[in-house]
Length: 459
Image (cartoon, rainbow, N blue to C red; front, side, top):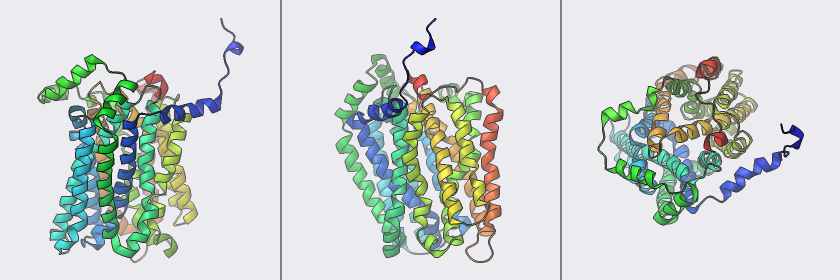
């Protein structure tokens, strides 16, 4: 038996930087996807932070009505992933990404230009124009995110996969932070439509960059270099493109037939409500409950979480790559949910910043690993479909949260009159805690179902 003292000593610093070095050598096709994902993060989160306010001020809807629209929009995106996620498997990554970005460009154009149609309130011309624009964005985004994760699976090696998924999640969040700096001066000078035109132009830039960097030749080269070309898998992909849709086969092979996997993804709904409150509640809360120097820079505070996620996600991925997914889910969801109780103390800038920082740490611990798990569990040629299915509970989260967020705001944090934000956040904190507690209580029942590490599962 080998003495433990004879085993080579591990270098913690080397283990930390190795994933970064390996990912730095990623192929050109993957860097093209990451770059467009960065820009799309800017456009999506920047527009989303202002969407409820846009429907309040430009379209003339109430808080509750604006909440319904924003909820239907974000929920519609996730529902679209459920149905259109597999298009990347059928069309190929490059075509799916290009089509999705083009749809989002036209959608943002229509949304931004909707004010020229005039009117105010539900069923007005500006309302229908805005809704039409959002619908195009929904259709585009429904195939965009699954296609991006298909690209990571195809363009990374088992050694670089964990960092690849973490990097994609991180750059999206970096894009989500940038509007916090970019948006306020433009919005204050030209209004919400002014900054929306900027996001529309950036979407057009994304299309050009994708087609110029992630070329067909670079995609083929990346697949050969990283995963290798399995001719049997290639033939299966080609057959999948040609085969007609079969509802019986689709239901028979559906991942939701696995009770433990279904429990795992649906029990995340309570903690995921905190994501939805980032745009359904937090913007109005900061705008209405804080001093002018805070509320006038609302975008900075609302978009601080994405910057932290950009910094934390690759670091956490490198440090925890050998920790099994289920344990990370329990710890991460707990760390994300608990800080919400700080907001129940009352409006305070220090508590708000502490909440955002701690919540971001928790998010960085579990969210990228969950997305990786969904992608890696998928059979060859079905990654997009699995990614779309794994997002279905996220659709329910957005839908359910939007049904009550506007009413809760109007009751506890109205634009004028007395406020009781402490009660609002106490209720939301209790809801979020359901996820980590349920995951912890179900750990023995789940057993080894999802005990896989990013490195161990791939190697």
